Length: 282
Image (tube, rainbow, N blue to C red):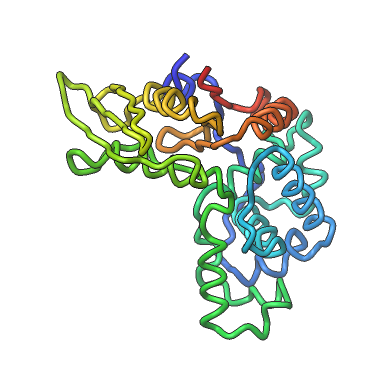
């Protein structure tokens, strides 16, 4: 089944707590037990450890404590929950519809604006209190981007100028491969309401694919072509995690041992009563 079919038939978007209320005051969020309780922070730290063990590479330059605060801020802005342990262990009795690790992964693989205008960050994380404003701003900007070197949310909507859509998608994937391959050239053309693309690597290997010329094209052929293209290198391949929406996906570039670890991790997750929504592109 194609990625596009699974986007709407087999996944459910991440669900906030049914009693959730949007809290607009950053000051109220900063004072909530969800952020101040050490047990909640330890729970998210543990999730980061498991995500790394699953083959998701967290940027070495990033501060783990700030990553945890980033997740908690995002979660607090959508949920009135104060105790993560209770919420994520209560999946069968009206609590969480998704596992903690999957929720953390979804949040941290995308960009965020939770730090924007959040002047209380030093109160939540005291080690940042004495940091010069320009350094703090730079740090928060880095931690607002996807935290994983080999996974990031990509926008699948095609509103690009002619000839730029395929280039954008290839560039996104190449950025996740950590230098395992170099792209020499990318071509894109339109033929009978289809987008036809060709990608050539620096070693001369090339791959051809086509997909529908529409606003939200099915990228299955594209991802499978990229895996066929990089397979002879013997270094890694892509899998895709669905987010539950129709506008984005999370590709992950996994090396052989990481692929085994990620498959084991995925089996232990749940998503709205079902398995982790992974397309293995097999």
